[in-house]
Image (cartoon, rainbow, N blue to C red; front, side):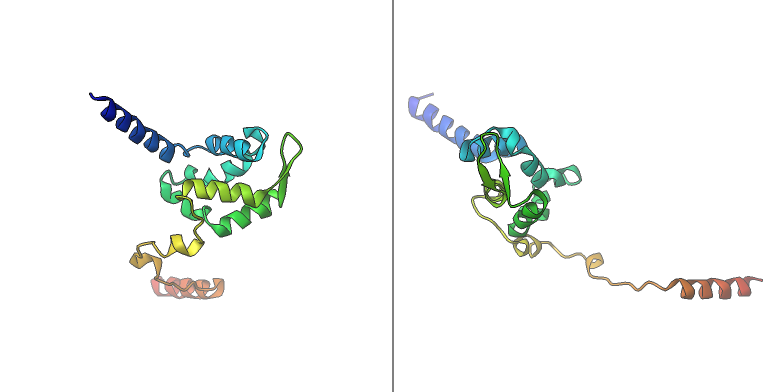
Length: 149
Protein backbone atom coordinates (compact mmCIF):
# COMPACT_ATOMS: atom_id res chain seq x y z
CA UNK A 1 0.00 0.00 0.00
CA UNK A 2 1.38 3.41 -0.94
CA UNK A 3 1.73 6.18 1.63
CA UNK A 4 -1.03 8.22 -0.10
CA UNK A 5 -3.42 5.26 0.09
CA UNK A 6 -2.56 4.77 3.76
CA UNK A 7 -3.15 8.46 4.56
CA UNK A 8 -6.41 8.51 2.60
CA UNK A 9 -7.56 5.31 4.32
CA UNK A 10 -6.76 6.77 7.73
CA UNK A 11 -8.59 10.02 6.88
CA UNK A 12 -11.70 8.16 5.71
CA UNK A 13 -11.58 5.95 8.79
CA UNK A 14 -11.21 9.02 11.02
CA UNK A 15 -14.21 10.70 9.39
CA UNK A 16 -16.30 7.58 9.83
CA UNK A 17 -15.42 7.31 13.50
CA UNK A 18 -16.12 11.00 14.15
CA UNK A 19 -19.41 10.84 12.32
CA UNK A 20 -20.64 7.87 14.35
CA UNK A 21 -19.06 8.47 17.75
CA UNK A 22 -22.05 10.32 19.24
CA UNK A 23 -23.95 7.15 20.01
CA UNK A 24 -23.83 7.22 23.80
CA UNK A 25 -24.89 9.92 26.28
CA UNK A 26 -21.51 9.78 27.98
CA UNK A 27 -19.76 10.75 24.73
CA UNK A 28 -22.08 13.75 24.47
CA UNK A 29 -21.32 14.56 28.13
CA UNK A 30 -17.58 14.49 27.43
CA UNK A 31 -18.18 16.86 24.55
CA UNK A 32 -20.14 19.21 26.84
CA UNK A 33 -17.34 19.15 29.42
CA UNK A 34 -14.83 20.15 26.73
CA UNK A 35 -17.12 22.89 25.43
CA UNK A 36 -18.51 24.35 28.66
CA UNK A 37 -15.90 23.18 31.25
CA UNK A 38 -16.45 20.84 34.15
CA UNK A 39 -16.68 17.06 34.01
CA UNK A 40 -18.93 14.71 31.99
CA UNK A 41 -20.95 13.85 35.10
CA UNK A 42 -22.15 17.49 35.16
CA UNK A 43 -24.02 16.88 31.89
CA UNK A 44 -24.87 13.18 31.81
CA UNK A 45 -28.46 13.53 33.08
CA UNK A 46 -29.44 15.90 30.28
CA UNK A 47 -27.78 13.83 27.56
CA UNK A 48 -29.27 10.62 28.97
CA UNK A 49 -32.72 12.22 28.86
CA UNK A 50 -32.35 13.03 25.15
CA UNK A 51 -31.35 9.42 24.40
CA UNK A 52 -33.78 7.74 26.80
CA UNK A 53 -36.11 6.94 23.91
CA UNK A 54 -33.56 4.35 22.72
CA UNK A 55 -34.94 2.07 25.44
CA UNK A 56 -38.11 1.48 23.49
CA UNK A 57 -36.86 2.12 19.94
CA UNK A 58 -33.21 1.26 19.33
CA UNK A 59 -32.93 2.93 15.94
CA UNK A 60 -31.76 6.42 15.00
CA UNK A 61 -35.40 7.40 14.44
CA UNK A 62 -35.83 7.43 18.23
CA UNK A 63 -34.51 10.98 17.82
CA UNK A 64 -37.84 12.09 16.38
CA UNK A 65 -39.22 12.12 19.92
CA UNK A 66 -36.79 14.61 21.53
CA UNK A 67 -34.08 15.69 19.06
CA UNK A 68 -35.72 18.90 17.84
CA UNK A 69 -36.22 22.51 18.95
CA UNK A 70 -39.31 21.62 20.99
CA UNK A 71 -37.36 18.84 22.73
CA UNK A 72 -34.66 21.33 23.69
CA UNK A 73 -37.24 23.58 25.38
CA UNK A 74 -38.79 20.53 26.99
CA UNK A 75 -35.39 19.66 28.51
CA UNK A 76 -35.22 23.20 29.86
CA UNK A 77 -38.60 22.70 31.56
CA UNK A 78 -37.38 19.46 33.15
CA UNK A 79 -33.84 20.44 34.17
CA UNK A 80 -34.30 24.18 34.69
CA UNK A 81 -32.97 27.08 32.66
CA UNK A 82 -29.41 26.51 33.81
CA UNK A 83 -27.28 23.94 35.55
CA UNK A 84 -24.24 24.72 37.69
CA UNK A 85 -21.33 22.52 36.72
CA UNK A 86 -18.59 21.21 39.02
CA UNK A 87 -16.45 24.33 38.58
CA UNK A 88 -19.34 26.56 39.64
CA UNK A 89 -20.18 27.85 36.17
CA UNK A 90 -23.84 28.28 35.20
CA UNK A 91 -24.57 26.73 31.81
CA UNK A 92 -27.91 27.25 30.03
CA UNK A 93 -29.69 23.92 29.63
CA UNK A 94 -30.76 25.05 26.18
CA UNK A 95 -27.10 25.29 25.08
CA UNK A 96 -26.48 21.71 26.22
CA UNK A 97 -29.60 20.50 24.40
CA UNK A 98 -28.65 22.39 21.25
CA UNK A 99 -25.20 20.84 21.34
CA UNK A 100 -26.65 17.32 21.74
CA UNK A 101 -29.15 17.71 18.91
CA UNK A 102 -26.62 19.30 16.55
CA UNK A 103 -24.09 16.53 17.22
CA UNK A 104 -26.72 13.89 16.37
CA UNK A 105 -28.50 15.69 13.52
CA UNK A 106 -25.69 16.73 11.21
CA UNK A 107 -25.10 20.19 12.65
CA UNK A 108 -28.71 21.38 12.53
CA UNK A 109 -31.61 21.68 14.91
CA UNK A 110 -34.75 20.36 13.26
CA UNK A 111 -38.22 21.24 14.49
CA UNK A 112 -40.73 18.55 15.27
CA UNK A 113 -42.39 18.97 11.87
CA UNK A 114 -39.12 18.09 10.14
CA UNK A 115 -39.43 14.66 11.76
CA UNK A 116 -43.20 14.16 11.65
CA UNK A 117 -43.66 15.17 8.00
CA UNK A 118 -41.31 12.34 7.02
CA UNK A 119 -43.45 9.63 8.57
CA UNK A 120 -44.88 7.35 5.91
CA UNK A 121 -48.60 7.32 6.68
CA UNK A 122 -50.25 3.96 7.24
CA UNK A 123 -54.03 3.50 7.08
CA UNK A 124 -54.31 2.70 10.81
CA UNK A 125 -52.76 6.06 11.68
CA UNK A 126 -55.70 8.09 10.43
CA UNK A 127 -58.68 5.88 11.21
CA UNK A 128 -60.79 7.44 13.88
CA UNK A 129 -63.04 5.42 16.08
CA UNK A 130 -65.79 6.34 18.47
CA UNK A 131 -66.10 5.01 21.95
CA UNK A 132 -69.43 4.41 23.52
CA UNK A 133 -70.28 5.75 26.94
CA UNK A 134 -70.64 3.31 29.79
CA UNK A 135 -74.45 3.66 29.65
CA UNK A 136 -74.50 2.89 25.92
CA UNK A 137 -72.37 -0.21 26.43
CA UNK A 138 -74.60 -1.44 29.27
CA UNK A 139 -77.69 -0.83 27.15
CA UNK A 140 -76.22 -2.80 24.23
CA UNK A 141 -75.19 -5.65 26.52
CA UNK A 142 -78.59 -5.81 28.20
CA UNK A 143 -80.32 -5.97 24.79
CA UNK A 144 -78.01 -8.83 23.78
CA UNK A 145 -78.78 -10.64 27.02
CA UNK A 146 -82.53 -10.24 26.41
CA UNK A 147 -82.20 -11.73 22.92
CA UNK A 148 -80.19 -14.69 24.20
CA UNK A 149 -82.81 -15.61 26.83
